[in-house]
Image (tube, rainbow, N blue to C red; front, side, top):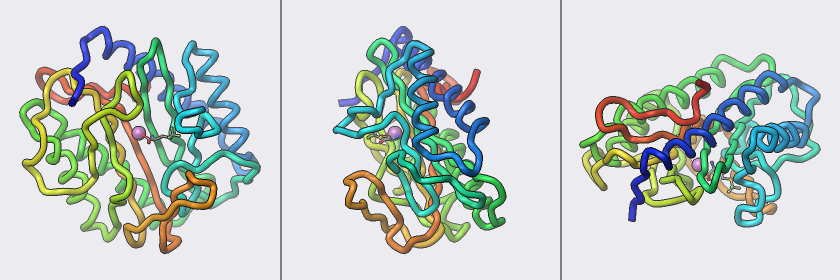
Length: 250
Ligand code: MF3
Ligand code: CO
């Protein structure tokens, strides 16, 4: 069942999403070669708590940290560690916060120092694919119109859409129905209604679509070792017009 949210509930998701967005802004400002992903995790937890939120990921299915920090061939769910960031790396920063029981969830991928033009293009295509999906997130469209728009934007660039992880409904739980795949035919699945809150999150690999999970039980990496990028927004379907993006800086 897809749980529709009241405007009061959306306001709480929005407050959580605002913390996510501002936290990402701080991480991007602070990030530089020589830092560890644990440093970024500490910044994340401090920022969320200082702003009255609870880190959403810490303790979720025993995930140990507040941040998911996924470097290069890591697709999602990289666990912060003593690993040192170096010039030429790219890093996905996935942040979740809870306000009064409601979740906000968002991710960005950025480069550390200088990266090749093909990696810059991977990042840009992934970001733009999310925008293409958001364009379809309007009342009366069907869920798979979002999925299809994302896939059909990505593949002509020669990149692959990850299948093994998908976007999701969000609210009192981090993961609610429906699942939001980043691939599929248009015109299928439930019709989009006002009050739906969705986390849309394309994951794009430079090589093949395959991924595997490392021994730590969390870190998903590309099977072929190719570089991967990830962007995510929590959004609300509006009565008319484009969706409200709840994880963008106000
Ligand atoms: N944005 C990710 C997701 O929706 C982050 C979850 S990390 C976890 O799945 F540790 F909380 F699982
Ligand atoms: Co998510």
